[in-house]
Image (cartoon, rainbow, N blue to C red; front, side, top):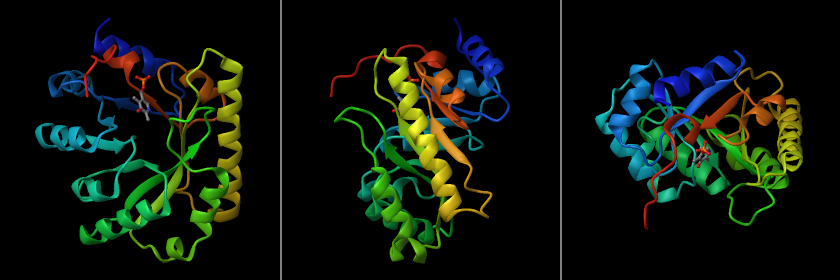
Length: 225
Ligand SMILES: *Cc1c(COP(=O)(O)O)cnc(C)c1O
């Protein structure tokens, strides 16, 4: 299957209310261009260095999302151009994003990443920690970040019922947070959940944005660290 066919077939299945972020991590710029030439403009990466090097060589009308863990000392590299940081997992990180956004005279959109999986390896805030961030004085004072929703990754398992319940919990939190902190804010509208293996379930459970890599670009080459 070609990238073009993969993209077209995924897009034809998605409801109009769901946005597709093509996760291009580990794939070379020439490969990303195949999706670009097919009209796709929204891509996501999970590592800052790789994101910046693709940003530099690829067309400037691409919108880039960061979906992986972000270290505070790397925020400065993406602050000038990033369109959405999906992986905010601490108040300290959000402060750093705010500071760098101000330096660049921008407002940077962010999602709070919520820990929903039954695994030790995934980053994210607990529900309580997310509430703490939203209720903090520090957050109230930030002028250059805008929290537009939540992101989560389900457990990597064949147990689709478990995955469904994890997404359902995240949707429930999303609704509560919207009601309590963003009632009149139409910009708080993004629920990012679902990857190649589980995006259909995520959409059933209310995702507005899905992050799909391997179903578009094929398997990722293994890279020794
Ligand atoms: C890699 C990655 C994806 C895409 O994964 P696929 O299974 O290849 O679709 C989605 N979200 C995050 C946070 C990722 O790191």
